[in-house]
Length: 270
Image 1 (cartoon, helix red, strand yellow):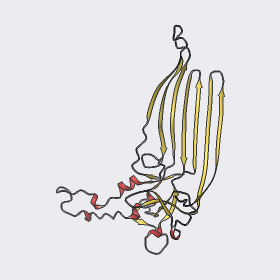
Image 2 (cartoon, helix red, strand yellow; image 1 turned 90 degrees about the vertical axis):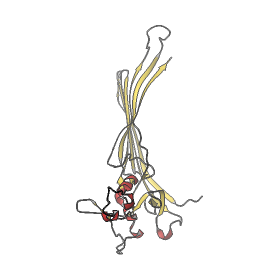
Image 3 (tube, helix red, strand yellow; image 1 turned 90 degrees about the horizontal axis):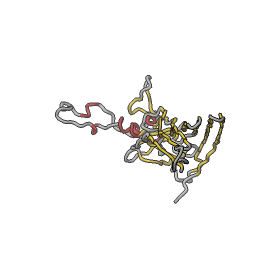
Image 4 (tube, one colour; image 1 turned 180 degrees about the horizontal axis):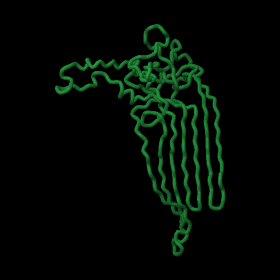
């Protein structure tokens, strides 16, 4: 086993707890936390040839990777081509920027862009109690994290072999006559598929009712408890076009969606 490099993290953490109301019938508390972290790779211990980035992470197809390590950049940066757009903001298929200006599109034109690691994370939770009722929920935010949308890339980029021909379809012309561009690496590795995956999620919300002396007489007289209903994975607010912006690998492919779950419970104290 070899330690391939060094990483420097700098940041700040903040945690606040506040009791807004505390009376006979009302109790309201809030909790907030914030973390800011900036990381940079400081050394790669000679594992990078000619100063090239060290590729890491999952493949996006049979051979290509988009995540990379490079000195001076954040860990898990995306190593991609810079997409060219038309005047209406639509991507031009197969057209990327010749960043080194040599007139040839090659690996030398790839650049390090964004990172899958969020520099800012936040959490907020609150609980309100009124007499025997209680209501609480928790929110969580991730800001500045990016994902490579491998699912969208696979759906958008198709070769002519993906077209199924039979007698009733394209029988009078070849599939190649459709004029599709090839499924090239410059298209697959475009920064077009690197999308902002910042999000705000409500992880949980719970409503409950506590009771004492459920029965006024008999052997069950001393029973107390609480009945509650809760929902998990309540909602997600994001501009990310995929199913779920929370993918820790940085590559969104074959991710099983998180379900919304409901739970009802009863706690009894004898």
